[in-house]
Length: 365
Ligand code: MTE
Image (cartoon, rainbow, N blue to C red; front, side, top):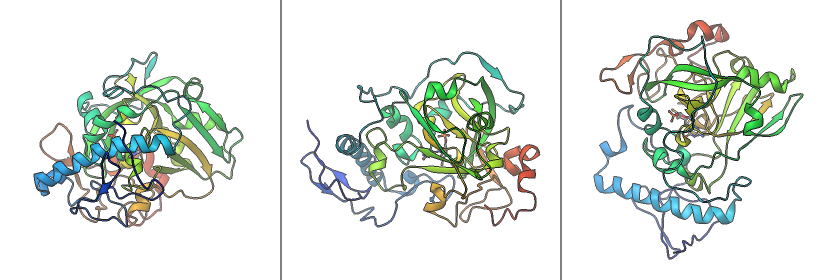
């Protein structure tokens, strides 16, 4: 069966439904989108699911749309955007969303957080935010099998002595992998404890020798609608972008993660390589990175572009500065029943607070 999609050149409304005969319809419950449609980071409260406030029939219609759109997008994107070099191989449903390959020679790091119960592998890999695969927590696990994390290239550009495009293996090979157990606090007020495996970002940066003009580092996720179906919708401006100030990027806690639980990263957690900055809200942890740029301006990150009065550049975990629509003073640890207090800088103040000395953290949220 062939899926035909009309009007490839125009921007699509994520509420549209694509039919196999090439026509489209727009469900009235979302309507014509002239701006971006997002669900979770703009929802009413941290624990409200769309299904909690929406009649079940509409909820199911949306899921049906997502599935149809994903299939249609695959057909459309195959015509529009060439897949990453050499990635045209057959895809298998379920692949890459379960356990990955065991990683060898992983060193335990003294910078790991002690005294916390690890969140289960199951929760870490089935409760995700990865809008390229949909807007519900369960969507990334269901849909990220389309991502092909090999072969993968990372382009390094900007103000640095060494720049270029590197294969994932070449990019990661010089370094010893470290296990870093970190708390992860999402801006939506849920949290986890994750045993990441990664490489100190500062070691990677030192390899490329940024010049004194490099004030910030910008990270960019893959743009590949053939493998990331929601990129054919306007749920977010694509590709996903994040940034760090150079001293933040050089902080010993910042890592580029390539695995968790001593296995390669599952697709839904950002395979093959993603950023982890445990003192910041989770949205700074950009997934499936293909570009790292040393720049002289403060990059505009995706959520800041989306809703600037709610999400800023710094995104430091701060129980004293509430989100405009919910408290940040407490959080729900996934796997626990009672809420717990949120700690300044997510409990990493000793290692990071000095970077923000003298700054108004209410303004620089
Ligand atoms: N990176 C990309 N490319 N796309 C995304 O939608 N979501 C962010 C961040 N990185 C996101 C992303 C948000 S909002 C969070 S909370 C974390 O990923 C979630 O990471 P996890 O799913 O591995 O827990």
